[in-house]
Length: 174
Image 1: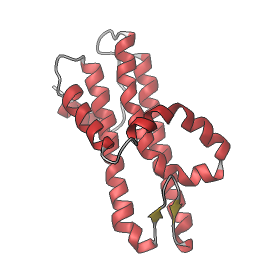
Image 2 (image 1 turned 180 degrees about the vertical axis):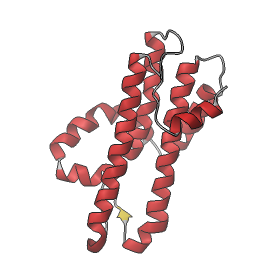
Image 3 (image 1 turned 90 degrees about the horizontal axis):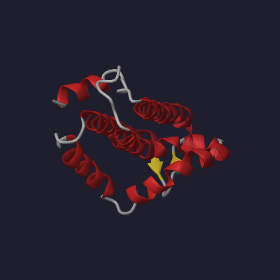
């Protein structure tokens, strides 16, 4: 989508920051990728380390950040639409990721022996490992691609148009 109005560099920075949260949330799905390519994982994780430290400070921090962003940013009409749109789009991406997590780990996980060890280690029954690896990589790269696309578009001053997700965000924001 084209630029709705002129955006300042400060608005672009604050519009891009929320996209780091879905990236941090998706790291558990990158466990197979990180095992296969440890050199790339170091490069990929380095910029996310400060966000990971805040996000993993204690178990409910993700929920607190979610509500803080939603109440203080998205519902605050005094903030520019550009920042509120991108924050809500990042939140929607996190919600989609959470739904996938619940489906995989609570519903399908027990059927195929899927467990998460401390850190980013995932254990799975050998018979289902290939399928789980494909699914995890698909989710990981999908969220990473959507987040990086969002960050690049925001830095350019454009509204990132992620199909279906952006439509949901436009319906929610006045």
